[in-house]
Image (cartoon, rainbow, N blue to C red):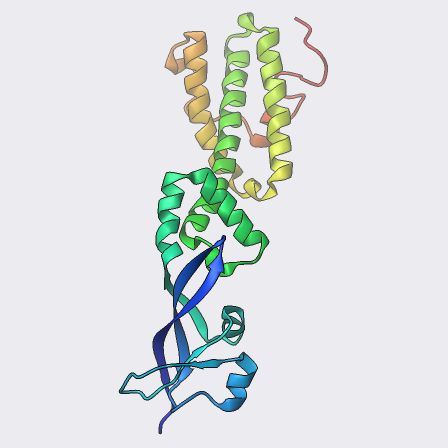
Length: 233
């Protein structure tokens, strides 16, 4: 008989999170009357009663990890898979604790892959948004410092100092963000102009259309507003 791949389903009962969960798996196996005795022994397979017709294949029970390790077992559907999205929407904190426990215990089948991917990507976007937010505050105050010198004050000075230190710290903790500095500078400048307009009452034409500062200059302690020492008003 010609060998090819066939996919069929079987059910495993096991305990998870203190209650029984029924999982439905898909297993890929060579099309033959049965798996070889040697392979069954390696996988610790146990025959299950099966009266199906057609392929004439036997169904077997095995430990999920063993089957996964041999490339035979793939998750297809289970009751928790249905419940995970509902838990994610209904109790986000509970979902995070459940997923953290699954990761800690290496329970691959318990992971909500879709939402984990979304949350990890969201964390990355959050780090970028923080960089843009801090840049917008810094650039807005540099604009105020440059274009309204008569209003310079200790509050502006301390804000510039704080944002410079925070941006440098943020980049040390997230060095990959350096690849998006130019984009962040553009986004931050737009919001920075709005901040300067709101807090100075100067007309829009006062400020340049494009960011006049290089990133390295803007975060340098001695640029425009020297924040290396204390305020001397």
